[in-house]
Length: 156
Image (cartoon, rainbow, N blue to C red):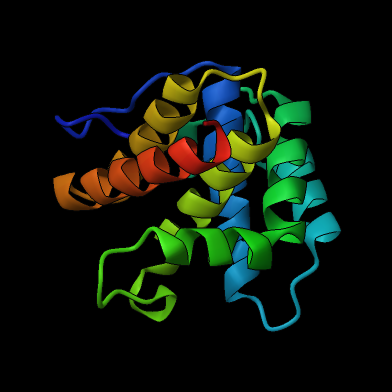
């Protein structure tokens, strides 16, 4: 569940919920010894999206968008990570970045490259918002900076 700056649950629409779930599912895949994206996708669709879990009610997500982002981000993750590496500050490596941030950046990179129906500013803002659900200001600024650089390359 994403929370706002006062640690209150943030209400987003189905598309925002889909992005958050895609990032969470991507992270789960990164943590698994033998990742199976089809299995994780089905688990989210059948048991998490729109569900109440441990007292938290999750927003119904746009299932098609969730599947598209997860599939596109996961299957092309090596391509996205190469692009992301090019836009990191000097001295930074992918190994230095938390896995949840890799998930956020990979999903954002996929949307910037493949979902031209979504405006650039929307993509960046959505993933900055997702980042705020897990981290403080510095990490959100980092995501904003990297996605902005990626956008300039992917959407000239």
